[in-house]
Image: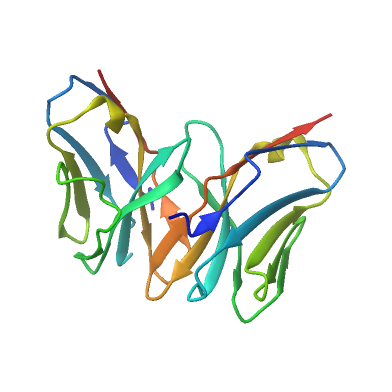
Length: 111
Length: 112
């Protein structure tokens, strides 16, 4: 039972354009959502998060949007850069501390 | 801080052998997580501890898997006996507050 779903296993975007990564969840108890980025042979690193009481959070080129009624969140990267090429994981937190991840989306930014 | 430290980085073992993965969390963090990364399931939560106490082990696949956290600075994940289907990358992560977790480099396990 996959509570956090990333239905697109891969995404290819041209440098300078917008990358949009999507994530759906099923558990209404999730109160905090996060995006992680993972390069090969490294552990995932935290990118950006959003509380369930907000619908948008922005950090530089990265913006996360949360639509609670649709149980959907998305990560926008603009402009995309080649260094953004990585696997992106969506994660959701259930109180008090359980962190559940999705299956990941591999983003490739080409010149 | 050196971050979350996992050992070994790579482990190759024969089917049926016992495997022990080790993790040192970031000092001061009170939650510790063990994840397994596979193509099909992404980052799968196996077990997590809070203040050294196992809180949720519902993700542990079978009785062959066990995890301990004898103190705040050390945890182990043991597989006995190991099977080829256990081959994956295993990550340990720790966190201080709800949400943001810091990951180690992972242990790539190959069971032949």
